[in-house]
Length: 199
Image 1: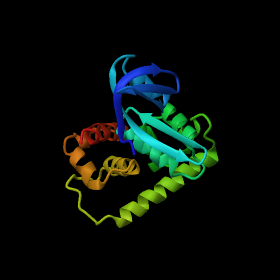
Image 2: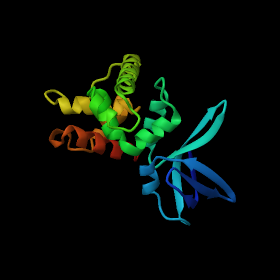
Image 3: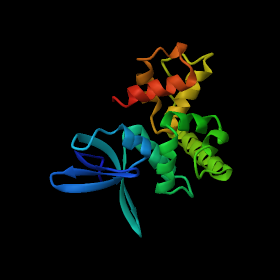
Image 4: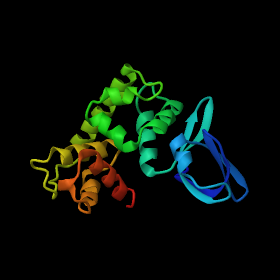
């Protein structure tokens, strides 16, 4: 319903902000890290939003980037993970590190997040990896113009970015602008997100 909200930052708290848009104040719950990235009171800001509707709760959740929003929506698709848990996770782990943890079965990194136990971490990895496999099966097979042979980092970075909802075609276009052969895995994911966010 709301893709983003742009207006004047009126209130800035630890867990939410209020943005004034032509006299209407929108209360938007956000991860702590996202709130820290915003400007000062009185400045015009833009927040990517998710309109969350449940029987007993209608809320707006906001994020500093499209990648954070994608990660939040992915987490909501995992059984047993609610909006508050997803926001808490985003306050403690970046989308690039999260995607890396999923594709590398890194339960330990996910359990370092407050409120995430081994079972929840394993469920997040299992469900999101299954979702990735399903999406890949539905995609038409396409040759990557980027040389991935003998470079596992590129293959893993592509998988990580697909976890965050990007297609192989989008990733390939972004990687054409990056020196993919000389970057480590996490740097590849971060740079990929940087260029994908500009599209």
